Picture 1 (cartoon, rainbow, N blue to C red):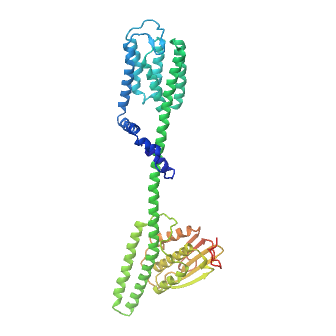
Picture 2: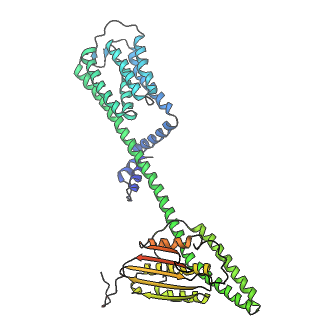
Picture 3: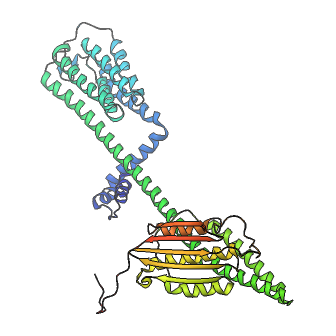
Length: 455
């Protein structure tokens, strides 16, 4: 990742969007600086693909730098004349130069070993009174150790370098200007370590930016998926509550009318029976469609259109009564003062409970609906008498759990939004089923007399 993209990634990870940095844009747009930055990016990509190319280039460059000292026979060192201890064979400098340069091939794979080998070879050649430009390999090894090696080992290596160079200048190889030599050696060693650490910190910083950018992208995808799943769950729940209830009423009416027509030997009995079967087939298809949409997620979503409330319970109960069941309704407390969300929850719970009553108890059952609001609690109780004795049991197999359990799950989810408690199961006395839900909700504030909104 280029520095320009890394800076943009840093702004994104902090949740803010800033305009591009003018200084960074100017650097990338500058003819010389832009070419250098692009060249650095190209070099890094090439190094990742072929790391041996850079290692070979470093070895060849250090060898070329050392070549003048190997060819020249003068005893002068980099800081004046040196006191060579005896005459050495002509091939010895070449051996030391090779011993200093060749280990650089492994500098990035084993930086600590490479440095200590070069440091030992340097100490041996200095003890023999040899100064040569191949000693720059120690700076390269020190730089590589600061860039790729262990920081603890780097501390020991830096201390060893200071001690070794001090001994070399003042004790092992007396030179003409020792203070200048020590200052130059320690300065170059410090520069090598500083450059290595700077590049190391820069790489770590860019790697952290790339990681945070990747995490941000993953989190964005996850948020999109969660939002889509929540929307699918909301659509599935609303379709189940609305379409499923109405289809159940239609199927109940068709079955009742078909039975009545058959008793009267009317020709419409077969058509009504086909209508009921078609309605049940449509409900099966609806369950399969909702199974694709439904996810076990829930989220507070805003209604996209006006939603039913307490006042719509009367039309709902009228439709259920028209299907056959005898339904009684009783309300206690100021239900109209409840918030719209609470009223929608009450409506959907009653609708789901009566839908299950139609499907599992048939049209000959009786149901009692009670909604009570008192002291910050709303209680919804829907109880039916089950299948009457001698009546034909509906063809819905299995326990009363709604659409594969989704209807009851929807009741639990709606109640959980208000910290409610749900009791669903057979009645204690006699036949039938009961749905008892208690919601913990405060009453909505009543409008002020003057018509002004209350704070």
